[in-house]
Length: 129
Image 1 (cartoon, rainbow, N blue to C red):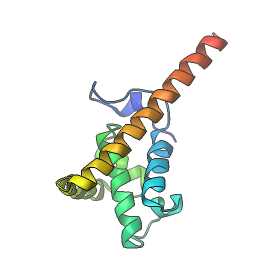
Image 2 (cartoon, one colour):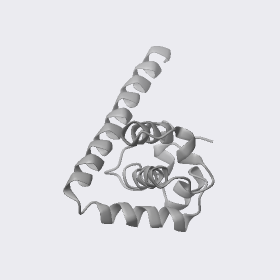
Image 3 (cartoon, rainbow, N blue to C red):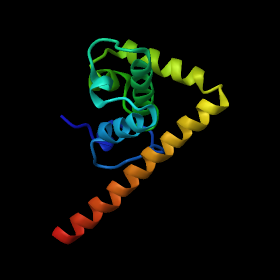
């Protein structure tokens, strides 16, 4: 079942749009890290590059979208502790300026995707209402 931002976000600074956030996050991570969607949701760890991309996606789902670690874990077929580990790992990697720029670009792309969906959703509701 899709999780909407409005149901999950408890922080008013984070994005608030009625959309399923996981496809947006996955699409951005897949494009940047050149991994297939199946790799992000595979039950086994998989190759190191795919596992790292999945950790980035989990981090973004938690930090940008405001999903709880429990929700992040469920969405990626993992538990809360695995999601927490992924977030700590990615946060530690942000000390590398090149990686931090890459992650900041991903965050901006996800925010942009949410904004576009929000505008399209409002336009659709106004046309139907």
